[in-house]
Length: 175
Image (cartoon, rainbow, N blue to C red; front, side, top):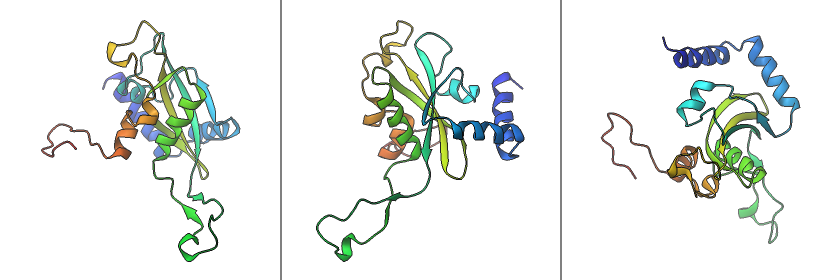
């Protein structure tokens, strides 16, 4: 078994068994702010598969998003039956919301991708891989790509836009 396969399996086992290390990690994250710089990825195998490299220009941020439906705003235009509902769904995934939060916090950086790292009863935690577009160590296809998270160009953004990835062995057409 290779190193990244071992890391992947150990991360999955840690979450599934609800280990004390995982619980302690979530408790520590709960006390932190919404967006935190992370020195190195929590799940290195997943980060590497999504494009992270441990070199200049790449960094990782952990973002906390609230779970549950969103309370709607106060009714505009009177108390009509059509406006009489209490909650509204956000319309996009929590992961896409987390990517947009990190893009707003770091306006001179770009979102490459993101992945789930944990959740508790109130929050979901995602690690966002970001890069500096002015760095010399980036591939050419990432240079001058502005606002990737807001335009739905990350893998999560493509999912909520309805664009499927054509994987191995699939005969379905790509939308």
